Image (cartoon, rainbow, N blue to C red; front, side, top):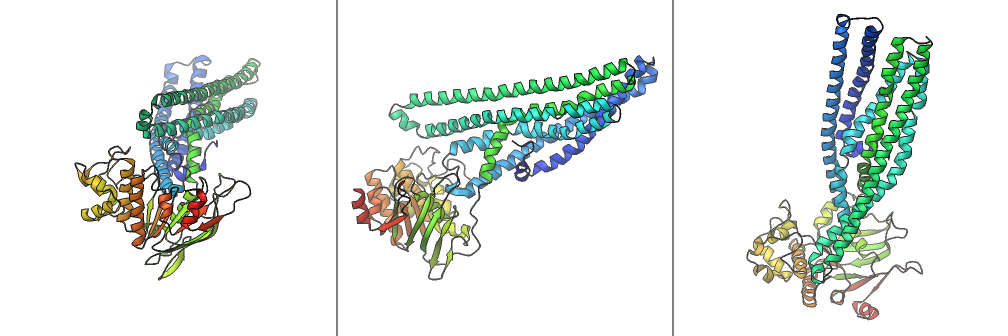
Length: 578
């Protein structure tokens, strides 16, 4: 964990203005500290050594009070600036993270862990309050005040300045050593929180099924166990934080004691003046105080810094940008040649040497074992993944363009995409959209007749008509009110409504009964008959049976990956025992 991570300044731009303000106010604080010590030592020496009365020190005493008030005002300004900067920085980080996750699309490393990502962007970013509001301003003071105090003491007493110069660096050294130990505790805390969030999300999503099969209580026990583990790791982080504060306080106290002993002995022997000795003793603690507080606030902000590391891992994941070449008009042919996709987190490629041609009016079924690269292929076709090798070319009678050079925004308007777990939402209408608005997501100007026609094509129009509000029926976030098959077919109707030139489907019949699966297969067949280029990931015979060609993606462990094989649907069905 770096004392000041430059990535925070890059992704949270509002922090830059606060740091400038903190530097200015920190310099004022250093001046006030030195002037306060000088005036206070003058008052004490005048009263105790010279026998001065109130009239003699009244002006200086009022000046000391004014300095106290000025320091309080500066501290208040730093606090206000830190809190406001923290709020703006957290908002910027959240907006950047959400925008980046959306830009990464289904290939995002966060797509497989929505619970952990949600906890990171909400609870994790909130944990940065301690960093922005406490640690960062104190870090600025720690960079200014000790140096100013050291230079001032150097002009008064060389030996005391030498002791400060030798002992002062020990505090950062201890901070680094304790911080290295703390990092492991923070990592364990966030891993546990991510597991807890993901498990809880899955539990809530599947609660009706768990209740039906009597497994709800066992899942409650699992959440309780994970929660206890999170509590234990959190207490471990707090324990280290408290112990680190004790260690830093002890070190600073011993350092000041060394200066006090040195000054006291030399004062007794007449080697140093009373005024100088008192001035040095008043200044010495001020040299250590900012560093002690930096260590204290650093460990208090450790949770937020651990979350920031994971947040930056998301923000620094490269996004496929494409180019500016327009997509040719007309029905589209997709040519994939030697496509290879690799992820940094995996030792072997997720997809290797895939080649095929998908033409308008045809259905290409993609089959293979789990982990063979089927979803990766669809992500590459959507433009969310940059291939390591090979190419994807989109062509029509009007011309052709490599997807790497194409305008990806324009390309995605030509593609109908149906994931395995579709989400029915409507732009700007909150978490409970009406069915009609959810279907219109890709075509906001579609009429009710067109929406009903799309629902009919998907084989779900009669089910929607049977609902009391029809197209105005609200969809619950957890899918209650619709069966799994109805939900999937409403999502398919949304794809049909946009009349795409290319249709990409990821196991659209997963978890459907035989009758519903047949209805979805018929709807896909009608999309192809209308001239669309259809590519569908399939595990079940109904979809493979209607395919014009089958792409098999195999990734055997031994020998090395053999790439891709294309066969007719009948051959694939016989080869797999269907």
